[in-house]
Image (cartoon, rainbow, N blue to C red; front, side, top):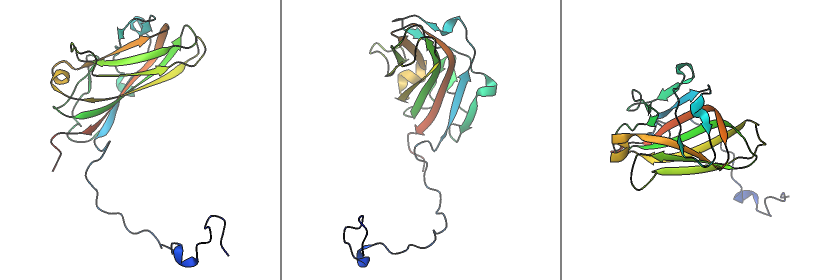
Length: 189
């Protein structure tokens, strides 16, 4: 007799019992997020946390050391990625996953928040992303804005400043910048 999922396949076509799993293999080369990550957070509100509608304004904050979480592996373990309100690269051609998490309240329902990573280039931001606001006015809402950037000459020379633009007035109650190195160049041996 066969079940409805086997569709008439005989016992010879079904996989035999595999037995218990074997021992773990040797550790492979670092893959995505194999270099760890670091999180910089601030949970206080100041005048710089008010963003008027349709005004591109720099995201600035001083991370709370008690809220900073560092789990970086070599060669990134001694590197600071958030310096003077900029993402700072370690070496040319490193690739970084960056995520900015905000807790905001909007003054109006709806709207959209855009994040730019800007190194001061005449060509504009090196990366941008946006997120729609859903909550009612004055309700706290989490906004998650992911970016992937590569450390080229302009980022190494200037760092990447983060800019927010919102289509409605917002107040940022909490800022977190998470950085996870994805790769280095050249690849490790």
